[in-house]
Amino acid sequence: MHRSWARWRRGSSGGWRAAPRPSGWSCTRPGGPRRGGRWPAGRRREAARALADGEVSAAILATPAPARFVTAARFHVTVDHLAVPAGHRLASRARVAAAELAGQVLITPSGRPWPGLPGRARLVADDDFTAALDLVAAGAGLLPIPQLLVRTIRRDDLRFVPLEAGDLRITYALAWSRERVTPELIALVQAVQDALWTR
Image (cartoon, rainbow, N blue to C red; front, side, top):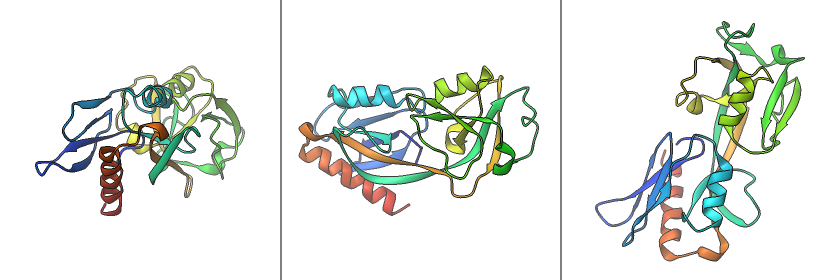
């Protein structure tokens, strides 16, 4: 399953079915219209706003999610690459060890710490990997990033180098509004949980 978005679609039996989708997400409510959206990878702010406004029934967000949302079906994504500017000294490396990041500035989306990584953190307010990658390209720092995100990005001004960082990971969860719980939403939550447990 992709790091921040997934697609849910109605199966032929009328129940929910879960499937990965790397660049966006949508959900189909049994007996109702499809509701959802597409945003560039990792744009948590737009997803949370759509969820709060009732534009979508559920979204996958990095944890901790905003307190106004209920979360379930947590899963982890390994952070195993490092985004560096194309001209950086590490750009041509086959891989980078965590110890080599000492003295480097590490961009930290949403204030999320990178445990076990040396270097100085540069905090970014939103969990927006697109904006964080723009900072990397501008020379403002380096960004630990999951390979699942790397696969969706095509930029000439960046290089993605495998990172040996042990058990570094980001946790995501399915989130929804406390005020908009429906039987269909509960069925969706169950379908996502089942999909994660049977991977």
